[in-house]
Length: 475
Image (cartoon, rainbow, N blue to C red):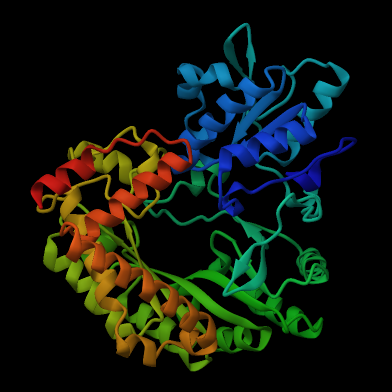
């Protein structure tokens, strides 16, 4: 977005990097820079926070224009326009925002009409006017990212300065849990090799040591990915550590790909394993993937000293406790560095939401602040939302044992970082245990939930605490 703004001064800010009083920090920024327009980008679980931020900015500076964009506003633009939230917003940017947000800024400067700007909705007389949405952008139209106008720039991975890189957009696969197609349509667009290499060089000039490649599915084109690895080596850019997310099918299709990834400097790969059961792979429209491909993909990466994080989607309609344990056992059997046990989340625009609503399995339809993949917003035919949450937390706790440390490639590569984390977290756990002993016994899982509610309040969220109350009562 920043790289495509023209004829204006601008700054970018990622509030995730603010560790203290966020409201106080934000007030200081608005007062110091006095912006004419503020753009807020959000996913579903961030939407309530975005509206609370908009409320405060409007209170501090009523004349400022506020635009909101991202996945959630794109999918629920009409709903937002009919809700009380609209009084805090002036624009909703839909789909890709690189061109349309710049057009809004230019129209404000020239006092032009907003009616001819595609892919936006704008407020007129208190109501939201919806403009036409054009087709997806050609990537040739998009300028290089601007990483030099950040108010905060302390992104870190394993305590190393880090940044993100995009080499392609979109995915053509039919996975029922994914909302990418609602944003980009059924498309897969690729930046040129020259564009990607120049962008990496731009990042390197900033002293970056870790780059996370955020492509939706870079392994849709294996030949291109291998050529990109070769280009990185040829341009002496393999002294940077890279992280990528990929499909098991893509990685399993070629041992040579894993070898080229190693040569290019790839250190971590997030694999979408999704599930250990055929019935659930079918439900998630991943039925063509096989468990053998997952095993082969992990083996290829480990042979080339690339750490593996495995993504699993749990809480599907027919899951019982044994099904969740099967996924735990499979994640241990694969010898991955660590699992990410995501819970099925009924995002708008997904087939998963449609299917689970049809079966009356969605337990939270509207409180989007819980839609982050870490908490259950669904139940299964055999497990409640609370059952799923408790089992997932137990699986995480049981995975981190001596065996996982011994075979963990990521752990061995960053041993000092993890030892410091262990000492810090160990002392915190001892403190909490002593509190439970000398004050009042409380389930660690309930404690974690209560801490999460406090964090949410810190982010201006008015989170429903009934789920916490139920857990305490049941305990």
